[in-house]
Structure formats: C-alpha cells, structure tokens
Image 1 (cartoon, rainbow, N blue to C red):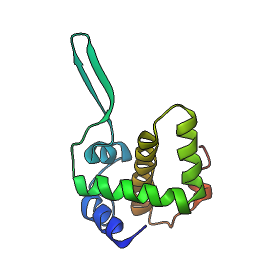
Image 2 (spheres, rainbow, N blue to C red):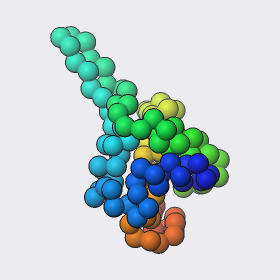
Image 3 (spheres, rainbow, N blue to C red):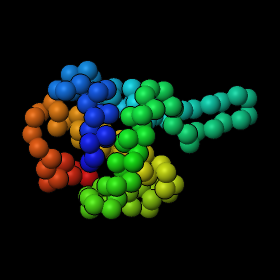
Length: 122
C-alpha cells in the first residue's frame, strides 16, 4: 500500500482503530454497502451507497487494483467473486472492503499483516 492510502485510512479510522468498534461499522461509514432503490415496479440493487468520505473510497479502490497485481490472496478473492457472477467493479469493491477490514484489525491488534492468519477461512 502506498503512503497516500495509509494516510487516508489512518485519518478516518484513527491511529489505533478506535473510531470504529467493528469492521462492519467502518465499512458502513466508507459507503461500501449496497443501496436499494424501489419505486413501484422499478428496482435497482447493484450500486453502492456513496455515503462517507470519497477520498477514502477512492484510496481503497486504487489499493484494491494494486493488490490484484501484487497480492496473490487478494487476486484469488477477486477471481472467486468473478466466478460467482459479480462484475469486475463489484469484485474490486469487495477486495477494497476486505482491505479495510484487514487494516482495521491490524490497527486494533497491533500485529503485522500475516496472510496465513487472514485467509484461513476464505
């Protein structure tokens, strides 16, 4: 991850991750959850809610793009989502969401990144 991504994440999550009690709340704050729109017979579901800081969403998305090239575990997650029928952008957003969850866990625990620990159940 680059310096700008780390700076964006630290500025919103806090230096120790204490701004959010769970990764679900952090994901909700960023706006990486589906927005459902229903009106009569019309229904749109496959968009993300763009609430929260645009800079952080952008930084996580770009970090997800870089992870596909340099991180084999994240590349595996990406291809798994594609095989489940997701679009490329939806799969990238999933990778960005996973990055956010990993960074929050690292900030709270103080432990370095260990792919064996993170991707045991995936």
